[in-house]
Image (tube, helix red, strand yellow):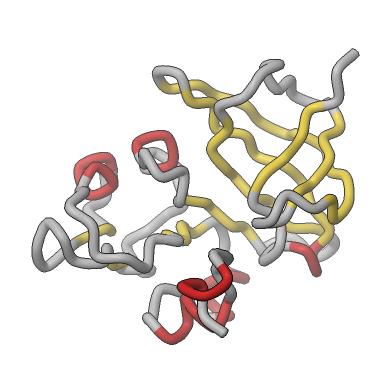
Length: 161
């Protein structure tokens, strides 16, 4: 079933729309994944990218990434009103790094432990927050995750102290 029936994107959905980098590109270092398969009139990610790696044919087209131009800087992440942009880094041997948008409280803190959540809000493990930066009211959080969970993790829950 597709995300239109379930409400949850799968790797197959994005592959069908040719929105995923190659396995080789994923292993080479950080790269953006736009989980934006619908034709909607939005183009903020295009203007956020300092490397011109994101493009659209028309304002309502699905955005495309030139994965050779993308360096995975994450400047596009906090610009997306749909919170649909992630940076994945599979260049490390024992873990993956996922950078994701975060708009909840409490504020994430570097070196704290977060509960890792999948697209349906289910817990899939725990990870260490390795970087946090803020643009406007969106934090961009980079979290260390088990390598085999890179596709699943798309949100976090901060443990209250």
